[in-house]
Image 1 (cartoon, rainbow, N blue to C red):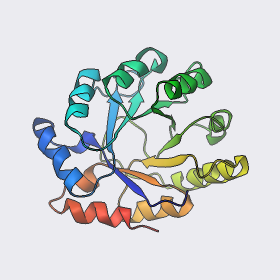
Image 2 (image 1 turned 180 degrees about the horizontal axis):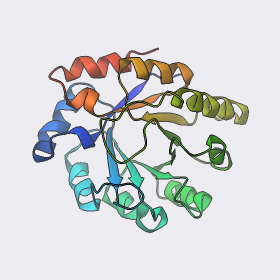
Image 3 (image 1 turned 180 degrees about the vertical axis):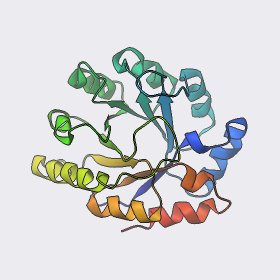
Length: 221
């Protein structure tokens, strides 16, 4: 992918009592997408956002909603989030029973279909879906909580997906997103490996200088 790096601040690190202000602030500071982490307390050990919140965000947001469903039953709930306004919808390869069918159904609804993968899952499990998806989301932490330390093996996993997409002739069509422990240093490592969307939570939201933090990621080459 030859386009510049996109930055998707993670809502998980925003002030939950000031979400409208928080979203508006990062939009003004240069964010490209809002990353919305949906957790079910089953597939991952935490509970977060349901479709009503995504619907409210959609009415307010001026940039795309990048919804990442960390749930054990993605086929059952994915379209609740599509109906609520997700522009990008990523589900986990570990949880989907019929991944191809879900990707096709998402694309038929006009949303970008993404597949996510946990650090402990063999990267090759993604290969059957790479001819179809619009985005690959590589977790660089074990999902469930914000503020975790980056797992360095993520860079080699990004590179493996990057190379596989080149073999398939799809590198210009598919974005590679990385989520977990992203800052300027780790962001540079994964961008060098092939990533072009960076999800950052605490690195952006837990600072007064959000514009500089977002710019520092967008300018990585």
